[in-house]
Image (cartoon, rainbow, N blue to C red; front, side):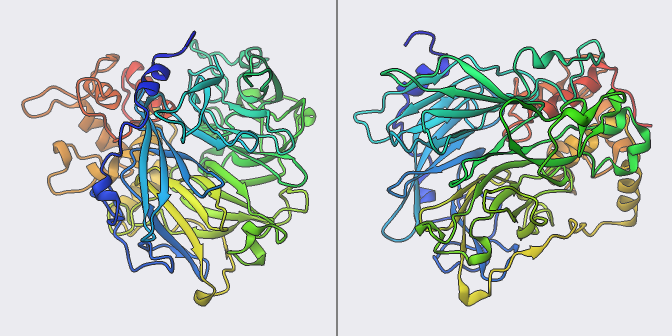
Length: 558
Protein backbone atom coordinates (compact mmCIF):
# COMPACT_ATOMS: atom_id res chain seq x y z
CA UNK A 1 0.00 0.00 0.00
CA UNK A 2 1.39 3.40 -0.93
CA UNK A 3 2.37 5.66 1.97
CA UNK A 4 1.64 2.91 4.47
CA UNK A 5 3.48 3.34 7.74
CA UNK A 6 5.63 0.40 8.99
CA UNK A 7 3.13 -0.42 11.75
CA UNK A 8 0.39 -0.65 9.12
CA UNK A 9 2.27 -3.26 7.09
CA UNK A 10 3.22 -5.17 10.23
CA UNK A 11 -0.36 -5.17 11.47
CA UNK A 12 -1.56 -6.57 8.16
CA UNK A 13 0.86 -9.48 8.46
CA UNK A 14 -0.08 -10.06 12.09
CA UNK A 15 -3.83 -10.40 11.64
CA UNK A 16 -5.23 -13.37 13.58
CA UNK A 17 -1.85 -13.91 15.17
CA UNK A 18 -3.62 -15.83 17.92
CA UNK A 19 -4.86 -15.09 21.39
CA UNK A 20 -2.23 -14.39 24.03
CA UNK A 21 -2.83 -16.03 27.40
CA UNK A 22 -6.18 -17.45 26.31
CA UNK A 23 -5.72 -20.33 28.72
CA UNK A 24 -5.70 -17.79 31.53
CA UNK A 25 -8.51 -15.69 30.16
CA UNK A 26 -11.06 -18.39 29.38
CA UNK A 27 -12.77 -19.67 32.50
CA UNK A 28 -10.37 -17.84 34.83
CA UNK A 29 -11.42 -14.20 34.84
CA UNK A 30 -8.46 -13.13 36.98
CA UNK A 31 -5.19 -13.88 35.24
CA UNK A 32 -1.75 -13.34 36.69
CA UNK A 33 -1.75 -9.95 34.95
CA UNK A 34 -4.57 -8.59 37.12
CA UNK A 35 -3.99 -6.43 40.19
CA UNK A 36 -7.52 -7.05 41.44
CA UNK A 37 -8.84 -9.52 43.96
CA UNK A 38 -12.51 -10.24 43.33
CA UNK A 39 -15.03 -10.12 46.17
CA UNK A 40 -18.01 -12.29 45.28
CA UNK A 41 -19.75 -12.16 41.92
CA UNK A 42 -22.25 -9.98 40.06
CA UNK A 43 -25.62 -11.35 38.98
CA UNK A 44 -24.10 -12.12 35.55
CA UNK A 45 -21.51 -14.36 37.23
CA UNK A 46 -18.53 -12.06 36.70
CA UNK A 47 -16.07 -11.51 39.56
CA UNK A 48 -17.08 -8.37 41.47
CA UNK A 49 -14.77 -5.48 42.33
CA UNK A 50 -14.99 -4.14 45.87
CA UNK A 51 -15.90 -0.54 45.01
CA UNK A 52 -18.46 1.94 46.27
CA UNK A 53 -21.34 1.94 43.78
CA UNK A 54 -24.89 3.17 43.41
CA UNK A 55 -27.27 0.66 45.09
CA UNK A 56 -27.68 -2.41 42.91
CA UNK A 57 -24.81 -1.52 40.58
CA UNK A 58 -22.07 -4.15 40.23
CA UNK A 59 -18.66 -3.81 38.58
CA UNK A 60 -17.67 -7.15 37.06
CA UNK A 61 -14.31 -8.16 35.60
CA UNK A 62 -15.04 -9.39 32.07
CA UNK A 63 -11.47 -9.88 30.84
CA UNK A 64 -7.87 -9.36 31.92
CA UNK A 65 -4.47 -9.76 30.34
CA UNK A 66 -4.41 -6.57 28.30
CA UNK A 67 -1.41 -4.28 28.47
CA UNK A 68 -2.92 -0.77 28.21
CA UNK A 69 -6.58 -0.96 27.08
CA UNK A 70 -8.12 2.29 25.88
CA UNK A 71 -10.92 2.48 23.27
CA UNK A 72 -13.94 0.17 23.20
CA UNK A 73 -16.74 -0.51 20.70
CA UNK A 74 -19.46 -3.11 20.13
CA UNK A 75 -20.70 -4.72 16.92
CA UNK A 76 -24.42 -5.38 16.36
CA UNK A 77 -23.86 -9.11 17.05
CA UNK A 78 -22.59 -8.27 20.55
CA UNK A 79 -18.84 -8.71 19.99
CA UNK A 80 -16.73 -6.19 21.92
CA UNK A 81 -13.65 -4.65 20.31
CA UNK A 82 -10.83 -3.19 22.38
CA UNK A 83 -7.94 -0.98 21.29
CA UNK A 84 -4.97 -1.89 23.50
CA UNK A 85 -2.22 0.75 23.25
CA UNK A 86 0.31 -1.59 24.78
CA UNK A 87 2.12 1.41 26.27
CA UNK A 88 3.61 4.68 25.13
CA UNK A 89 6.35 3.05 23.09
CA UNK A 90 6.18 2.68 19.31
CA UNK A 91 4.20 -0.15 17.65
CA UNK A 92 3.24 -1.90 20.90
CA UNK A 93 -0.51 -1.82 20.35
CA UNK A 94 -3.05 -4.45 19.41
CA UNK A 95 -6.75 -4.87 18.60
CA UNK A 96 -8.86 -7.48 20.38
CA UNK A 97 -12.29 -8.99 19.86
CA UNK A 98 -14.03 -10.16 23.04
CA UNK A 99 -16.75 -12.76 22.54
CA UNK A 100 -19.23 -14.03 25.07
CA UNK A 101 -18.99 -17.79 25.47
CA UNK A 102 -21.76 -20.29 26.21
CA UNK A 103 -20.64 -20.49 29.85
CA UNK A 104 -21.17 -16.73 30.31
CA UNK A 105 -17.44 -15.92 30.36
CA UNK A 106 -15.80 -13.59 27.88
CA UNK A 107 -13.00 -14.74 25.60
CA UNK A 108 -10.55 -12.14 24.18
CA UNK A 109 -9.07 -12.91 20.76
CA UNK A 110 -6.17 -10.86 19.48
CA UNK A 111 -6.79 -9.73 15.90
CA UNK A 112 -4.02 -7.23 15.11
CA UNK A 113 -0.60 -6.53 16.60
CA UNK A 114 2.28 -4.06 16.20
CA UNK A 115 0.01 -1.04 15.89
CA UNK A 116 1.30 2.33 17.02
CA UNK A 117 -0.68 3.55 20.05
CA UNK A 118 -4.25 2.73 18.97
CA UNK A 119 -6.73 4.58 21.18
CA UNK A 120 -9.96 5.42 19.36
CA UNK A 121 -12.13 2.59 18.01
CA UNK A 122 -15.70 2.55 16.66
CA UNK A 123 -18.07 0.55 14.46
CA UNK A 124 -19.37 2.54 11.50
CA UNK A 125 -23.17 2.12 11.29
CA UNK A 126 -23.14 2.36 7.50
CA UNK A 127 -20.64 -0.34 6.59
CA UNK A 128 -20.41 -2.24 9.90
CA UNK A 129 -16.61 -2.19 9.79
CA UNK A 130 -14.21 -1.57 12.66
CA UNK A 131 -12.43 1.82 12.54
CA UNK A 132 -9.27 2.39 14.58
CA UNK A 133 -7.34 5.60 15.26
CA UNK A 134 -3.58 5.76 15.77
CA UNK A 135 -1.76 9.04 16.41
CA UNK A 136 -1.23 9.54 12.68
CA UNK A 137 -3.97 7.56 10.89
CA UNK A 138 -7.45 6.05 10.96
CA UNK A 139 -7.90 2.67 9.29
CA UNK A 140 -10.79 0.21 8.99
CA UNK A 141 -11.16 -3.53 8.58
CA UNK A 142 -13.71 -6.31 8.49
CA UNK A 143 -12.93 -8.65 11.42
CA UNK A 144 -14.80 -11.50 9.73
CA UNK A 145 -12.89 -11.36 6.45
CA UNK A 146 -10.88 -14.51 5.72
CA UNK A 147 -8.22 -15.72 5.54
CA UNK A 148 -7.34 -12.39 7.13
CA UNK A 149 -8.84 -8.88 7.07
CA UNK A 150 -7.62 -6.29 4.59
CA UNK A 151 -6.77 -2.99 6.27
CA UNK A 152 -7.87 0.18 4.50
CA UNK A 153 -6.34 3.53 5.34
CA UNK A 154 -9.13 6.11 5.71
CA UNK A 155 -7.39 9.18 7.19
CA UNK A 156 -3.66 9.80 6.94
CA UNK A 157 -0.94 12.24 8.02
CA UNK A 158 -2.43 13.63 11.22
CA UNK A 159 0.11 15.26 13.60
CA UNK A 160 1.48 12.68 16.02
CA UNK A 161 4.00 14.63 18.11
CA UNK A 162 3.96 16.74 21.25
CA UNK A 163 2.17 16.26 24.54
CA UNK A 164 -1.11 15.01 23.08
CA UNK A 165 -0.55 12.63 20.15
CA UNK A 166 -3.49 10.27 20.77
CA UNK A 167 -6.62 10.45 18.65
CA UNK A 168 -10.24 9.87 19.58
CA UNK A 169 -13.09 10.10 17.07
CA UNK A 170 -16.84 9.72 16.61
CA UNK A 171 -19.12 9.43 13.60
CA UNK A 172 -21.77 12.03 12.87
CA UNK A 173 -25.16 10.71 13.96
CA UNK A 174 -26.91 11.68 10.72
CA UNK A 175 -24.14 11.09 8.19
CA UNK A 176 -21.81 8.19 9.07
CA UNK A 177 -19.40 9.30 6.32
CA UNK A 178 -18.42 12.23 8.56
CA UNK A 179 -15.74 11.63 11.21
CA UNK A 180 -14.98 14.12 14.00
CA UNK A 181 -11.41 13.71 15.27
CA UNK A 182 -9.58 15.15 18.26
CA UNK A 183 -6.22 16.73 17.43
CA UNK A 184 -4.67 17.71 20.76
CA UNK A 185 -2.28 20.54 21.46
CA UNK A 186 1.46 20.13 21.06
CA UNK A 187 2.11 21.91 24.37
CA UNK A 188 0.51 22.51 27.76
CA UNK A 189 -0.27 26.21 27.38
CA UNK A 190 1.48 27.09 24.08
CA UNK A 191 4.90 27.38 25.70
CA UNK A 192 7.70 27.38 23.13
CA UNK A 193 11.10 25.67 23.28
CA UNK A 194 12.73 29.03 24.04
CA UNK A 195 10.32 29.70 26.90
CA UNK A 196 8.24 32.30 25.07
CA UNK A 197 4.44 32.43 25.03
CA UNK A 198 3.49 34.06 21.71
CA UNK A 199 0.14 35.57 20.76
CA UNK A 200 -1.53 34.25 18.73
CA UNK A 201 -0.51 30.73 19.60
CA UNK A 202 1.34 29.21 16.58
CA UNK A 203 -0.51 25.94 17.07
CA UNK A 204 -3.67 27.53 15.70
CA UNK A 205 -1.98 28.04 12.33
CA UNK A 206 -1.18 24.33 12.06
CA UNK A 207 -4.64 23.13 13.14
CA UNK A 208 -3.66 21.80 16.55
CA UNK A 209 -5.76 22.04 19.74
CA UNK A 210 -9.12 21.51 18.06
CA UNK A 211 -11.54 19.15 16.38
CA UNK A 212 -11.30 18.23 12.71
CA UNK A 213 -14.10 17.05 10.43
CA UNK A 214 -13.18 14.47 7.80
CA UNK A 215 -15.64 13.35 5.11
CA UNK A 216 -15.22 9.93 3.49
CA UNK A 217 -15.86 10.21 -0.24
CA UNK A 218 -15.59 8.29 -3.49
CA UNK A 219 -15.86 4.58 -4.18
CA UNK A 220 -13.13 3.84 -1.62
CA UNK A 221 -14.78 6.01 1.07
CA UNK A 222 -11.57 7.74 2.11
CA UNK A 223 -11.01 11.22 3.53
CA UNK A 224 -8.20 13.26 1.99
CA UNK A 225 -9.04 16.74 3.33
CA UNK A 226 -10.41 18.14 6.58
CA UNK A 227 -12.17 21.13 8.07
CA UNK A 228 -11.35 22.49 11.52
CA UNK A 229 -14.74 22.89 13.16
CA UNK A 230 -13.60 24.01 16.64
CA UNK A 231 -10.44 25.60 18.02
CA UNK A 232 -9.06 26.38 21.46
CA UNK A 233 -9.54 22.84 22.82
CA UNK A 234 -6.40 21.48 24.48
CA UNK A 235 -7.22 17.77 24.31
CA UNK A 236 -10.61 16.33 23.33
CA UNK A 237 -10.19 12.67 24.21
CA UNK A 238 -13.86 12.41 25.24
CA UNK A 239 -16.34 12.97 22.38
CA UNK A 240 -20.01 12.00 22.11
CA UNK A 241 -22.85 12.61 19.65
CA UNK A 242 -26.40 12.87 20.97
CA UNK A 243 -28.62 10.23 19.30
CA UNK A 244 -31.53 12.64 18.67
CA UNK A 245 -30.28 16.23 18.47
CA UNK A 246 -26.95 15.17 16.86
CA UNK A 247 -25.03 17.75 18.91
CA UNK A 248 -21.33 17.01 19.33
CA UNK A 249 -20.18 17.14 22.96
CA UNK A 250 -16.54 17.44 23.98
CA UNK A 251 -14.78 16.64 27.26
CA UNK A 252 -11.83 19.01 27.75
CA UNK A 253 -8.65 17.91 29.50
CA UNK A 254 -7.55 21.34 30.70
CA UNK A 255 -4.06 22.77 31.19
CA UNK A 256 -1.65 21.93 34.01
CA UNK A 257 0.68 23.89 36.32
CA UNK A 258 -1.40 27.03 36.39
CA UNK A 259 0.51 28.26 39.44
CA UNK A 260 3.89 28.37 37.67
CA UNK A 261 3.14 31.96 36.64
CA UNK A 262 0.53 32.74 39.28
CA UNK A 263 1.84 31.86 42.77
CA UNK A 264 -1.33 33.29 44.27
CA UNK A 265 -3.18 30.27 42.82
CA UNK A 266 -0.95 27.79 44.65
CA UNK A 267 -3.53 26.74 47.23
CA UNK A 268 -6.08 26.14 44.47
CA UNK A 269 -3.76 24.56 41.94
CA UNK A 270 -5.06 21.05 42.53
CA UNK A 271 -8.55 22.29 41.63
CA UNK A 272 -7.76 24.73 38.80
CA UNK A 273 -8.47 24.91 36.04
CA UNK A 274 -11.63 22.83 35.92
CA UNK A 275 -12.12 20.26 33.21
CA UNK A 276 -15.01 21.11 30.89
CA UNK A 277 -17.91 19.75 28.90
CA UNK A 278 -18.37 21.80 25.74
CA UNK A 279 -21.14 21.81 23.15
CA UNK A 280 -19.29 22.07 19.85
CA UNK A 281 -20.58 24.77 17.54
CA UNK A 282 -18.83 24.91 14.20
CA UNK A 283 -16.45 27.83 13.83
CA UNK A 284 -16.20 28.65 17.54
CA UNK A 285 -13.06 29.10 19.64
CA UNK A 286 -13.14 27.66 23.16
CA UNK A 287 -10.36 29.69 24.75
CA UNK A 288 -7.18 27.59 25.04
CA UNK A 289 -4.49 28.76 25.81
CA UNK A 290 -5.68 32.29 26.55
CA UNK A 291 -8.57 31.65 28.94
CA UNK A 292 -9.82 28.95 31.29
CA UNK A 293 -13.02 28.09 33.17
CA UNK A 294 -15.83 30.58 32.49
CA UNK A 295 -13.72 33.18 30.72
CA UNK A 296 -10.84 33.82 33.14
CA UNK A 297 -7.57 34.98 31.51
CA UNK A 298 -4.73 32.49 31.93
CA UNK A 299 -1.80 33.76 34.03
CA UNK A 300 0.36 33.67 30.90
CA UNK A 301 -2.15 35.83 29.00
CA UNK A 302 -3.39 38.25 31.64
CA UNK A 303 -4.58 40.82 29.10
CA UNK A 304 -6.59 38.34 27.03
CA UNK A 305 -10.14 39.36 26.17
CA UNK A 306 -12.17 36.24 26.96
CA UNK A 307 -15.56 37.60 25.93
CA UNK A 308 -15.33 36.26 22.38
CA UNK A 309 -14.64 32.65 23.34
CA UNK A 310 -17.32 30.00 23.77
CA UNK A 311 -18.06 29.21 27.42
CA UNK A 312 -18.27 25.63 28.76
CA UNK A 313 -21.66 24.01 29.14
CA UNK A 314 -20.51 22.57 32.47
CA UNK A 315 -17.37 22.72 34.59
CA UNK A 316 -16.12 19.41 35.98
CA UNK A 317 -13.74 19.01 38.94
CA UNK A 318 -10.12 19.86 38.22
CA UNK A 319 -7.82 17.20 36.79
CA UNK A 320 -10.41 14.42 36.63
CA UNK A 321 -9.30 13.74 33.02
CA UNK A 322 -12.48 12.77 31.12
CA UNK A 323 -11.26 10.27 28.52
CA UNK A 324 -14.51 8.60 27.51
CA UNK A 325 -18.24 9.29 27.57
CA UNK A 326 -21.48 8.19 25.93
CA UNK A 327 -25.15 9.07 26.22
CA UNK A 328 -27.26 6.42 27.89
CA UNK A 329 -30.25 5.67 25.62
CA UNK A 330 -33.63 7.12 26.52
CA UNK A 331 -36.68 5.05 27.40
CA UNK A 332 -37.71 4.64 23.76
CA UNK A 333 -34.56 2.66 22.97
CA UNK A 334 -34.28 -1.09 23.43
CA UNK A 335 -30.79 -0.51 24.85
CA UNK A 336 -32.27 1.37 27.85
CA UNK A 337 -33.69 -1.74 29.43
CA UNK A 338 -31.10 -2.39 32.15
CA UNK A 339 -30.51 0.76 34.24
CA UNK A 340 -33.38 2.65 35.91
CA UNK A 341 -35.09 5.75 34.55
CA UNK A 342 -32.75 8.26 36.20
CA UNK A 343 -29.96 7.08 33.88
CA UNK A 344 -31.98 7.16 30.68
CA UNK A 345 -30.98 9.98 28.35
CA UNK A 346 -28.14 11.10 30.67
CA UNK A 347 -24.43 11.33 29.91
CA UNK A 348 -22.09 8.69 31.35
CA UNK A 349 -18.51 9.93 31.81
CA UNK A 350 -15.32 8.15 32.89
CA UNK A 351 -12.96 10.16 35.10
CA UNK A 352 -9.57 8.64 34.37
CA UNK A 353 -7.99 10.55 37.22
CA UNK A 354 -5.06 12.84 37.80
CA UNK A 355 -3.27 13.19 41.12
CA UNK A 356 -5.88 12.54 43.81
CA UNK A 357 -8.88 13.30 41.62
CA UNK A 358 -10.93 11.26 39.21
CA UNK A 359 -10.91 7.46 39.40
CA UNK A 360 -14.68 7.17 39.10
CA UNK A 361 -17.66 6.83 36.78
CA UNK A 362 -20.29 9.56 36.86
CA UNK A 363 -23.72 10.39 35.47
CA UNK A 364 -24.20 13.94 34.15
CA UNK A 365 -27.80 15.22 33.88
CA UNK A 366 -28.59 16.74 30.46
CA UNK A 367 -31.60 18.31 28.75
CA UNK A 368 -33.62 16.70 25.95
CA UNK A 369 -30.98 17.77 23.41
CA UNK A 370 -28.11 16.32 25.43
CA UNK A 371 -26.78 19.63 26.74
CA UNK A 372 -25.23 19.43 30.26
CA UNK A 373 -25.97 22.01 32.92
CA UNK A 374 -29.13 20.49 34.39
CA UNK A 375 -27.32 19.52 37.57
CA UNK A 376 -23.95 18.45 38.87
CA UNK A 377 -22.40 15.04 38.10
CA UNK A 378 -23.42 12.16 40.36
CA UNK A 379 -21.19 9.22 41.21
CA UNK A 380 -22.06 5.78 39.85
CA UNK A 381 -18.73 4.25 40.94
CA UNK A 382 -16.13 5.66 43.30
CA UNK A 383 -13.49 4.39 45.70
CA UNK A 384 -10.85 3.53 43.09
CA UNK A 385 -8.38 6.02 44.57
CA UNK A 386 -8.14 4.14 47.86
CA UNK A 387 -5.56 1.63 49.11
CA UNK A 388 -3.32 1.34 46.03
CA UNK A 389 -1.47 -1.96 45.84
CA UNK A 390 -3.88 -3.74 48.19
CA UNK A 391 -7.15 -5.55 47.58
CA UNK A 392 -8.66 -2.45 46.00
CA UNK A 393 -5.89 -0.85 43.87
CA UNK A 394 -6.11 2.55 42.26
CA UNK A 395 -8.22 2.32 39.12
CA UNK A 396 -8.38 4.55 36.07
CA UNK A 397 -11.39 4.05 33.76
CA UNK A 398 -10.80 5.20 30.19
CA UNK A 399 -13.51 4.65 27.60
CA UNK A 400 -17.26 4.11 28.02
CA UNK A 401 -19.56 1.88 25.97
CA UNK A 402 -23.31 1.46 26.41
CA UNK A 403 -23.83 -2.11 25.24
CA UNK A 404 -26.73 -3.57 23.27
CA UNK A 405 -28.30 -4.89 26.48
CA UNK A 406 -27.91 -1.59 28.37
CA UNK A 407 -24.88 -2.62 30.44
CA UNK A 408 -22.05 -0.09 30.76
CA UNK A 409 -18.63 -1.34 29.67
CA UNK A 410 -15.35 0.29 30.67
CA UNK A 411 -11.73 -0.12 29.73
CA UNK A 412 -9.43 0.42 32.72
CA UNK A 413 -5.78 0.85 31.83
CA UNK A 414 -4.06 1.03 35.21
CA UNK A 415 -5.00 -2.56 36.03
CA UNK A 416 -5.28 -3.73 32.40
CA UNK A 417 -8.89 -4.85 32.57
CA UNK A 418 -12.18 -4.80 30.69
CA UNK A 419 -15.12 -4.22 33.04
CA UNK A 420 -18.87 -4.73 32.69
CA UNK A 421 -21.04 -2.52 34.90
CA UNK A 422 -24.51 -3.99 35.43
CA UNK A 423 -27.59 -3.24 37.50
CA UNK A 424 -29.72 -5.62 39.55
CA UNK A 425 -32.86 -4.05 41.08
CA UNK A 426 -32.73 -6.65 43.84
CA UNK A 427 -29.67 -4.81 45.16
CA UNK A 428 -31.23 -1.35 45.37
CA UNK A 429 -32.78 1.48 43.40
CA UNK A 430 -29.64 2.35 41.44
CA UNK A 431 -29.79 6.03 42.41
CA UNK A 432 -26.39 7.64 41.66
CA UNK A 433 -24.61 9.12 44.66
CA UNK A 434 -23.96 12.77 45.42
CA UNK A 435 -20.31 13.37 44.57
CA UNK A 436 -17.86 13.65 47.43
CA UNK A 437 -14.15 14.57 47.56
CA UNK A 438 -11.60 11.77 47.23
CA UNK A 439 -11.09 9.84 50.41
CA UNK A 440 -7.59 10.28 51.69
CA UNK A 441 -5.50 7.23 52.44
CA UNK A 442 -4.55 6.42 56.00
CA UNK A 443 -1.10 7.98 56.28
CA UNK A 444 1.39 8.74 58.99
CA UNK A 445 1.61 12.27 60.42
CA UNK A 446 4.97 12.64 58.66
CA UNK A 447 3.50 11.77 55.26
CA UNK A 448 0.48 14.00 55.85
CA UNK A 449 2.80 16.93 56.62
CA UNK A 450 4.84 16.23 53.46
CA UNK A 451 1.73 16.15 51.30
CA UNK A 452 0.44 19.40 52.79
CA UNK A 453 3.77 21.08 52.11
CA UNK A 454 3.93 19.70 48.57
CA UNK A 455 0.60 21.32 47.71
CA UNK A 456 2.18 24.76 48.18
CA UNK A 457 5.24 24.16 45.97
CA UNK A 458 5.67 24.85 42.27
CA UNK A 459 9.38 24.20 41.58
CA UNK A 460 10.24 21.73 38.82
CA UNK A 461 10.85 18.65 40.93
CA UNK A 462 7.83 19.21 43.17
CA UNK A 463 5.73 19.10 40.00
CA UNK A 464 7.51 15.89 38.97
CA UNK A 465 6.74 14.50 42.41
CA UNK A 466 3.02 15.28 42.15
CA UNK A 467 2.45 14.58 38.46
CA UNK A 468 4.76 11.62 37.91
CA UNK A 469 6.15 9.95 41.02
CA UNK A 470 3.02 10.02 43.17
CA UNK A 471 0.87 9.02 40.19
CA UNK A 472 3.04 6.33 38.60
CA UNK A 473 5.83 5.19 40.92
CA UNK A 474 4.96 5.05 44.61
CA UNK A 475 2.52 2.17 44.26
CA UNK A 476 5.59 -0.04 43.70
CA UNK A 477 8.65 1.88 44.87
CA UNK A 478 6.87 3.15 47.96
CA UNK A 479 6.42 -0.36 49.32
CA UNK A 480 9.04 -1.48 51.81
CA UNK A 481 10.90 -3.18 53.21
CA UNK A 482 13.33 -3.79 50.40
CA UNK A 483 11.67 -1.57 47.78
CA UNK A 484 11.70 -2.82 44.14
CA UNK A 485 15.15 -2.46 42.64
CA UNK A 486 16.38 -1.10 45.93
CA UNK A 487 14.89 2.30 45.04
CA UNK A 488 12.57 3.98 47.52
CA UNK A 489 10.29 6.67 46.10
CA UNK A 490 7.96 7.78 48.84
CA UNK A 491 4.68 9.62 48.48
CA UNK A 492 4.97 13.41 48.66
CA UNK A 493 8.67 13.13 49.60
CA UNK A 494 10.03 15.56 47.01
CA UNK A 495 13.14 16.41 49.02
CA UNK A 496 14.03 12.79 49.82
CA UNK A 497 13.19 11.43 46.37
CA UNK A 498 15.27 14.03 44.55
CA UNK A 499 18.21 13.10 46.76
CA UNK A 500 17.70 9.37 46.07
CA UNK A 501 17.68 9.93 42.32
CA UNK A 502 20.81 12.11 42.36
CA UNK A 503 23.05 10.30 44.80
CA UNK A 504 25.34 7.39 43.78
CA UNK A 505 23.95 3.92 44.47
CA UNK A 506 25.80 0.98 45.93
CA UNK A 507 27.92 -0.48 43.10
CA UNK A 508 26.32 1.93 40.60
CA UNK A 509 26.21 5.56 39.63
CA UNK A 510 23.25 7.89 40.19
CA UNK A 511 20.02 7.42 38.28
CA UNK A 512 20.13 11.09 37.27
CA UNK A 513 23.11 13.15 36.18
CA UNK A 514 22.16 16.83 35.85
CA UNK A 515 21.74 17.99 32.24
CA UNK A 516 22.51 14.50 30.90
CA UNK A 517 19.57 13.24 28.80
CA UNK A 518 21.21 9.79 28.66
CA UNK A 519 20.71 9.44 32.42
CA UNK A 520 19.65 5.96 33.45
CA UNK A 521 16.31 7.19 34.80
CA UNK A 522 15.30 8.60 31.40
CA UNK A 523 16.46 5.44 29.62
CA UNK A 524 14.44 3.31 32.03
CA UNK A 525 11.37 5.46 31.48
CA UNK A 526 11.82 5.07 27.71
CA UNK A 527 12.57 1.36 27.92
CA UNK A 528 15.96 1.84 26.24
CA UNK A 529 18.22 -0.99 27.35
CA UNK A 530 15.98 -1.74 30.34
CA UNK A 531 12.43 -3.05 30.83
CA UNK A 532 10.24 0.02 30.58
CA UNK A 533 9.07 1.43 33.89
CA UNK A 534 6.34 1.91 34.81
CA UNK A 535 4.69 -0.85 32.79
CA UNK A 536 3.25 0.81 29.71
CA UNK A 537 5.53 3.80 30.09
CA UNK A 538 4.76 7.43 30.86
CA UNK A 539 2.59 9.70 28.78
CA UNK A 540 4.49 12.29 26.68
CA UNK A 541 3.34 14.96 29.13
CA UNK A 542 4.70 13.15 32.17
CA UNK A 543 7.97 12.16 30.50
CA UNK A 544 8.58 15.75 29.39
CA UNK A 545 8.28 16.99 32.97
CA UNK A 546 11.02 14.58 34.09
CA UNK A 547 13.20 15.31 31.06
CA UNK A 548 12.85 19.07 31.50
CA UNK A 549 13.92 18.74 35.14
CA UNK A 550 17.03 16.80 34.13
CA UNK A 551 17.85 19.25 31.32
CA UNK A 552 17.54 22.17 33.74
CA UNK A 553 20.26 20.68 35.93
CA UNK A 554 18.01 18.58 38.18
CA UNK A 555 17.51 21.40 40.71
CA UNK A 556 16.60 20.27 44.20
CA UNK A 557 13.10 21.14 45.42
CA UNK A 558 12.73 24.27 47.47
